[in-house]
Length: 395
Image 1 (cartoon, rainbow, N blue to C red):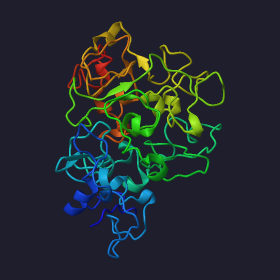
Image 2: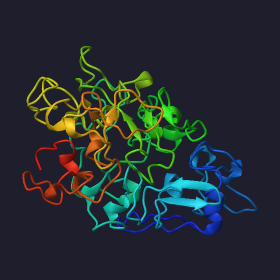
Image 3: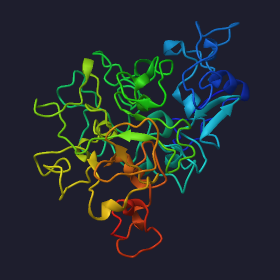
Image 4: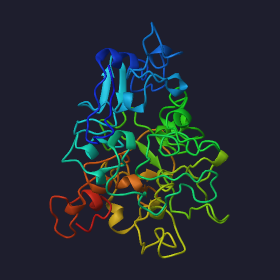
């Protein structure tokens, strides 16, 4: 029984775990969609010596032991390439980030990149995770002008580009980034070690370590939908945290907020989702004093790039957005204890995920909708969708 991703053929579909392997691997991951903390037999995920009766204990039959004594990687549980956005074995439910279903979880589906799902393969549809979807043939560096994550004041200055992206760790999104001073780029070991065991569900206000941060995104605050937003609605969805106005970010001046946290870790200084994205895509999410970078010098129109971490104006076309739309979600200035269908202009804010998916979507640039159908003034089929959810008078 194996889990295989063909690194030479980026369109290849991972071979599924056998039923027995899946039972062993996933049996302890989630007792239910409401209780995500790990529980069960340690041997289902860990092995002491990677050998039992002279047979390797890894689920891919590899004879090379894994760090942290684990029996599989992130892909083995969360990117099985099946036909459903979740995998259920007994009472265990495991969210999938790569599958062929037209239904995606909140962050999207890497299968759109490879053509496993959607209208056809395209590198522009999402983040290319090197060992999962292959090397991006369109881009090298993250759009937005930042290649060295965190800037020159970081101890490591680790270069992140589209050929080195991983799920977690220094070159990924989940868990610790810039871990320590040794330049360790592994994504399973230092990035998310212990996070599943320390996982906190629901309203996440502390965000002091991966386990109590939103979806293991270090220092990000929010409210996690208990079903990973498998069945989203205006009243059942994730809740995100934002600021009422964007700030200037950087690590070269004491007058601005820096992405360098304790121990040189890369993290959002205020815990917002948009600041998190700005750790790589800085020009799209920060104020600036020049015309070439950022969204503008002040948090007011006219902007040179679409702002995020900005409350919707209480007047004009924006005042019509009062019912939460899952295809153009907003963020809150305080993380709520439960999700709400009410949108409050003047308070609730636009963020990066208002327009984009985090992993991948079926549209170019990871957009939540087809940008080509956003045609102002024609009151066509796209009226009230996409851009026009906020810009309600322009369709």
